[in-house]
Length: 332
Image 1 (cartoon, rainbow, N blue to C red):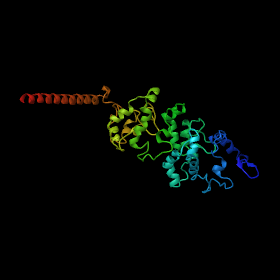
Image 2: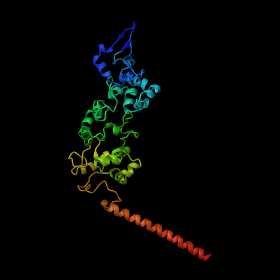
Image 3: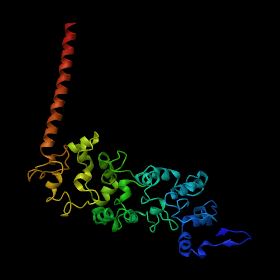
Image 4: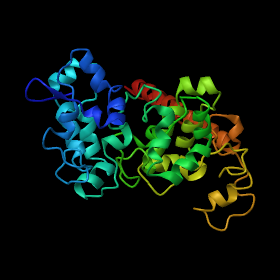
């Protein structure tokens, strides 16, 4: 309802019935019913007598201006303290510094998403609502509005198919790329920057809860870090192979799937992306092996040799120093 002169009121829904119906179910309206008066109404976002078309660059709801519009409430500390679980300005600040935010607000790319593209406009819902476009099982479809081919590839992957079956522990776009703070993969701060990939994958593949529930192999991250690739990556070398180099990015499949980059028929070509002119039997050996396990073969025995060799040297040196000390005492 819009206040009007003469104790009358203008109901926006009289003309905009679909928008009003959607808006009536949103937290903005439901919150006002809980006596939180500062929550936005139609005129908060669109204006009163000064309503402008969204296409107008001066409209508060113009694509480029809409982020600033959301900030007016979400940076209000009094309001955020009154409303439970209300996203704060930190989310919007993170967005402004993200690849999407800079594209829209700095570069003027009107195709870049703003708040409403992901959360909805009149009909937005909390992220934990199964009908929300940012509920976990809907995120790929939401991102797919811009990244259609990538979303399709993801949905066919082991992660996408698991999520479609209701396995909410399976990662989706935001688990790997972040939410409001998404950065380019070439940005060292990105969760999917080459040297950060193993850490991102470890959120699931080194999680006792996830590994235990789904019977995953618990040593995948630790054995990678023991490898040459992992050690070099830990030292900041972005050129060496990481998890995604071998398993894929959005197109991850079980090893038994012929589409998998680590399927027996594909390993030579996968390794060949970095190692040219490989013999056919180059990658027949085990990959994720720990030097502390006999199953790693020669690596285990070399490690054991050096452990014993170094230990014997240290013990021998200590014995030598003790005997030398006693000899000197006798001389005195």
